[in-house]
Amino acid sequence: MKPELYDVVIVGAGPAGCTCAYQLANKGLKIALIEKDEFPRDKICGDALSPDVINQLRRMNPELLEEFLEQVEKVPAHGIRFVAPNHKFLDIKFSDPDQNRTAGFIATRVVFDAFMYNQVKDKAGIDTFQKHEVSDVSHTEDGVFVKTDKSLFRGKMVVGADGAHSRVKKHLSQNKVEKNHHCAGLRQYYENVSGFKESHIELHFYKDLLPGYFWVFPMANNRANVGLGMLSKEIVKHNINLREKLADIIEHHPLIKERFKDAKPMETVKGFGLPLGSKKRSCSGDRYLLLGDAASLIDPFSGEGIGNAIRSGRIAADHIQSAFKEQRFDAKFNMRYDKELYGKMWNELRLSRILQNTLKYPAISNFFVNKARKNQSIQLLMTSMLDNNIDIKKELLKPSFFYKLIFQ
Ligand SMILES: Cc1cc2nc3c(=O)[nH]c(=O)nc-3n(C[C@H](O)[C@H](O)[C@H](O)COP(=O)(O)OP(=O)(O)OC[C@H]3O[C@@H](n4cnc5c(N)ncnc54)[C@H](O)[C@@H]3O)c2cc1C
Picture 1 (cartoon, rainbow, N blue to C red):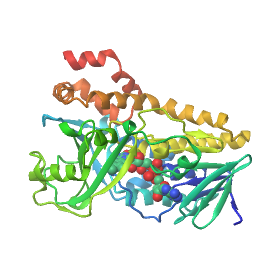
Picture 2: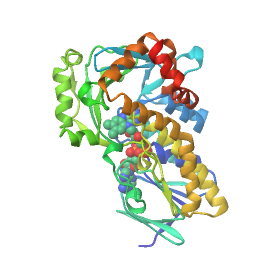
Picture 3: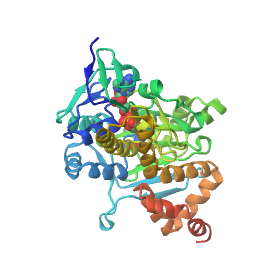
Picture 4: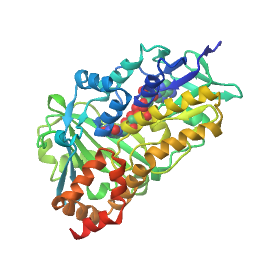
């Protein structure tokens, strides 16, 4: 088979791959964006777009954000409700126009990912190939080969933006699934769930799920995204059947069962993995970069990965332009991508890992929520944390934060 020739072959047109392609459009490079599905397509997710995602869209292009705000069907999320194991809750606001704080949103991945894909599909320099499933990736001294069920592509670099089960990662990197840094997640859409605090997403940290949680997110048209995520290590250790656990919460949990009494599931339960960014990994090598879930960049505390997928797409696009300028595609040069990536993300990922490890103890979770309910400075810090404000996250790591938590 004669290969089709490109400068960069991007595998996967989710948020990471589309962002990378978007940032590389009109830059004089010939890009192939390869996707196994066809848009609009579903992706198992909680569908929560945190304020960080909105900020990332703005950074890509303020007009892109405007289009998102105008065109994408969504409901606003002005805050988040944390429910502690003792059933007390804490409401944290993330939007406040007076303080210039952005709201988050809930939009299905069917619409959000199609929106992202539509932004790149007609851009100059980008050829898109839907319904092309990549089966093999290899490299030689002078190029990479990407094989799909229909064609063969040759490029100078390949970008692995193909999600949690990345083929690019499998064929080119040594990274493996590590159960202590990986979550299993379930999602089921419902209609007619009651009892929401308006425009708030809910994370329920019940005792036997820690450090994971059950979620209920309100959606348009009286629907809800309902799900459960748990650390894979804990699932194996305690031999947990996650689907049974989800059904058990919905049917029997005292805080939940009444809210579901008239609710109807709209689909069967669906599951997918979440590779967590709680450990630094190699995200590049000779002629390749890994992005988003393929690079394991999901926040280990919140389970959010869309913001970091977009961020990695932006960082990768900048790196690729330097690589072409200097004609360097080797592993040593590509290490600069890892450095930049973790330089931007490691503080927040590390803090989230600390939170994940600390709040896995029910007593500490209860104590934290009890204290934070009464303490405005902690609430403000939490708000800024959800905005992904790195300076505030550093603040959270300081002893003064723990002083405020314990003594105020
Ligand atoms: C249950 C669950 C709930 C979640 N909830 C949230 C949430 O509420 N908010 C949030 O921010 N994050 C959430 N996440 C995480 C979020 O879904 C991911 O972090 C995000 O989708 C990563 O984007 P990505 O572009 O790296 O990968 P993906 O979105 O997975 O995109 C990868 C793309 O590559 C394509 N692809 C895969 N293999 C191939 C192949 N062989 N050939 C060609 N194409 C291929 C796929 O079809 C897909 O389009 C959740 C994850 C799960 C599993």
